[in-house]
Image (cartoon, rainbow, N blue to C red; front, side, top):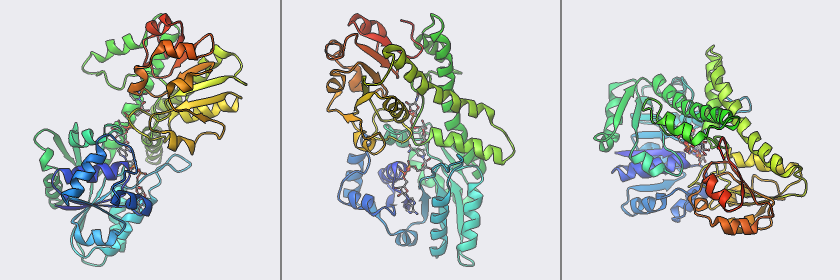
Length: 435
Ligand code: NAD
Ligand code: UGA
């Protein structure tokens, strides 16, 4: 099948490449010329494990190409995926201008039947607006369908998630659209549940799923706060809860809270669309509040250990919002570093992939280091904020010898074993850990 993916960001590039891997002919479109130029030159605009190899392979097989020319793609492709960004507006609602702009450009240029599929995460009833936009700007008599196909991939595991999804959700309103979408996903249908719904349910499944996962994280962080006041250990509590299959063990890791380009924005957008529809989603407002409090907790633990922050050297291990990505969008490290820097601390930081992106977002005074040991050297305290595998293998006795006495570690992701850290003579502060 010939398909175009419009918006070649994290989702568009991964989806387009994986559709090509499934045997389709794909053109990835973006209006960012630099990005398309890089991709044409074989360079990756993002770091995502396994993606570069898959892109190269599918380009070599002539199944994947990149372009800034949307009109040509509209002419040659029957299915047009909209995978542009839907960032938050100042009031928290989703900015759908990019979705509208692409829908309009499609409408103004289609000559024959086209299926327009929203892959961007959008509030319920966006499909209705895309349909209205198509009607308003397309020429009389031209045929089209609108569909919704939300994406559930995680950054850092994006290729695997796309090719091995827990489910594929297809929101459609005609038999023709349903048939086309099922054909498109046929290579996955043997191992994956494909759920066909109406467009509104499909849109809502995405917002409700992301918000539920965020709720699970805030719930475990709230429980961790109770652990802090007792002798309970959050790791044991989470394990004990997760063994109940109805609860499940994933997304029960307490820590510095969730960040990223999606949970914070999708929670806010879900709260806003609910409000617009007449429902005050107080539960989700509390999820946000608990998440913000986790960042405060890291700062409080740092102050409890160091007293005043002015003039103190603080090393930060990990900047990206999660491991295996260079994505800094809404990373908890941003607010935490800004605050400790504001209070006069001298911040040294290291991340295996995200430092280039971090430099644009963190205060000018932050010193970026070559590795974890340089970060620890002469620091009064070390804060771990992203659970990169390489941090879990650090030589902690070397870390101890590099830190200023008394060596202190605030483990914002509960990634170290408190007992072994303490054995090395390092003061350890985790989140809800019993030590
Ligand atoms: P992104 O910012 O990385 O990429 C969006 C791309 O769209 C950019 O390259 C931008 O230049 C391009 N674009 C914007 N307007 C355009 C236009 N008019 N014509 C052509 N290109 C245009 O965003 P992303 O992280 O890929 O997210 C895209 C959507 O997918 C969002 O709605 C997001 O919520 C959703 N989503 C993201 C993830 C994720 O892990 N990042 C996962 C699931 C869903
Ligand atoms: C999330 C969802 O997991 C994807 O299904 C969804 O497609 C995507 O959002 C999206 O819509 O963009 P992602 O943001 O890439 O994916 O990363 P997650 O692995 O979900 O982690 C999000 C944040 O939660 C990270 O900051 C992570 O550190 C934090 N987290 C995660 C916890 O604090 N505790 C946990 O137990 C799990």
